[in-house]
Length: 352
Ligand code: NAP
Ligand code: ZN
Image 1: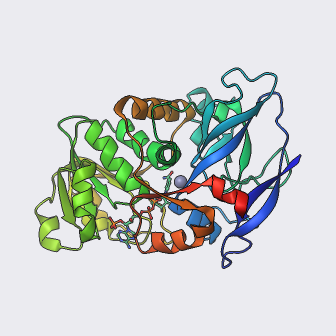
Image 2 (image 1 turned 45 degrees about the vertical axis):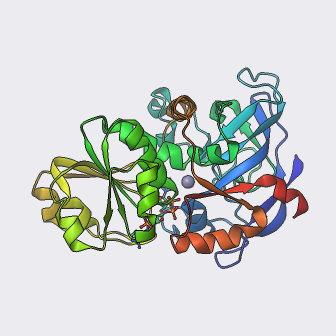
């Protein structure tokens, strides 16, 4: 065991603050990384403030962060994929049983014995897992990803959650050229959704509550932008979408979105608001529409996504901040004031 620097929340109402945590020494199959950048996902905020108390109650102290990119500092004797000095990345998962049907299909995100990167029982330490708001992390090599060397690292970090969470459902539900695709909410997830749907050749319509994001949405790859609070603008698109990816972090009108789907269209939820969303039955019945959800993606698909980003030169648009500004960043997330992901420069933790 060794001590690592980190930022943690001590309770649902306390701001994040500097702390020291204990990490395990690398085992034979582990990779130890120095963390260079960690993205701020809205899930970090939900979890730090215990907004998911029903499904995933928070254990304090909580060290969030699951968009991790860094450099390998040590490897176990059985590690084959990495060597010291390599770039490496870690997303939302750090372990799974490796033997269940889900793991065998490369869908570790559905493993019944999954370990998430933070706030999950840690079988090595006996406590809970601690995330990437830290100077280092130790992870089994099965859950460590290779990073294309041509990409800006601050913008790579958010790919590990915002990237894979949007890439996976777009692929799974067959978004390609000729499909009309809606992306709802231009935040961290939404802006990656726009980039990927555009790269896949779809006709992309971005739905936003923030009129000032219109120009950016077009620059990021949207073909059209709709201000979702404007009923006339929404009505023009009624019954026309093959697929809509809902990336919204708060309560909103799902029924208005269902009405935009064509026959057999699918509204896929990736946003995870604190409160339950309400659905009127006829929005689904008429048009035989589907409502679905999708959590992150498997490890093989995450690697595929990173390689795709390397090939197409795709990264997140980031505002790089020092860790000392993390609480301010959380408040700005709540005001939809992020363009379009905060990425923490972990060098700042040295002076914390
Ligand atoms: P984010 O950067 O804060 O973006 C959320 C966006 O939602 C905002 O920028 C805003 O976009 C829109 N929005 C916010 N409040 C709204 C409201 N009341 N009504 C309508 N639109 C609203 O958040 P994020 O990091 O992208 O995460 C989005 C959600 O996905 C969170 O709930 C997060 O926990 C969840 N998530 C799920 C997974 C998964 O595996 N499924 C993975 C990561 C995150 P506009 O300004 O354009 O309206
Ligand atoms: Zn996330």
